[in-house]
Image 1 (cartoon, helix red, strand yellow):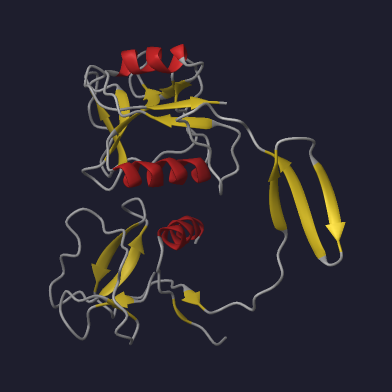
Image 2 (spheres, rainbow, N blue to C red):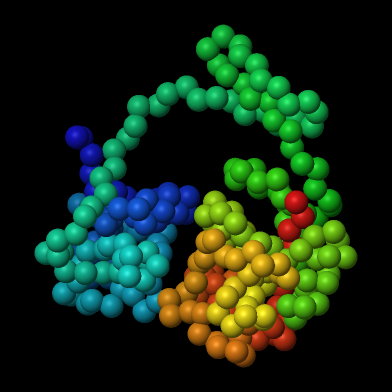
Amino acid sequence: MGGELVAINSEDENNYITEQAKIMDSCANDRVKENTFVWGDSSDPVVIHNWRYLEPDGGTLENCVYITRTYHFFWGDLKCSTSLPYICERTSNPQPSPVEVSMFHKTTDAVIGPTEINLIQVKDCPLGWVIPTNVTSTSCYLFSTDSKNWENAQIECRNNGANLVAINSEEEMFYIKEQAKDRNSHFWLGANDRLNEGIFVWGDSNETLTVNDWRVFLPSGGTTDNCIYISKKYLFNWFDTKCSDVIPFICEQG
């Protein structure tokens, strides 16, 4: 096959491997030097990671790293003698790919020689709002620097012709998570179970959650914690908390 156990070197690659693991382990290890994790037999250090809370915790006994489906596909350390499925990685042969060109006018397709050019229409977002450049989305997002309780955050979004963000795909979920990481902040999402305990919907609709990024053992707040936010304290996973808490928020216009 000509490959090696996978070495994860970017957030995008980590997100991709996590998603693939959900439908099926990594070669990070500290076998040579305790707590100095490298990829395979190299001295290439682990520069990005997705450890579960309180991991790694195995000391000199657990020296190999795996993705655990039990805890939302975070990383854990484990004895290298444990038998698990595994992921191999090899360099692909580069192939010419379509060139995407952004236009503000008519959508059309053109083929020039061997290179396909896709002309697509780009949404015009209000000043201060952002639109993903590498995610399939027609929405604009506002990552507020102001802090409000959940209800007032929703009102502020509606005053701008938007709503608190509703996340409807894994792709959108990872985009929002990366934006929150870049800003190093908590953010309100639109999800809540104010009307029916344990049944989370987006905003005031009856649209239930089709994807989620809960921290392990959550939601846990019962009837007191009914609104959802992204927590910068715990790897930007989702938490439930009191709707009266005051934090920044994300509006979505689309």
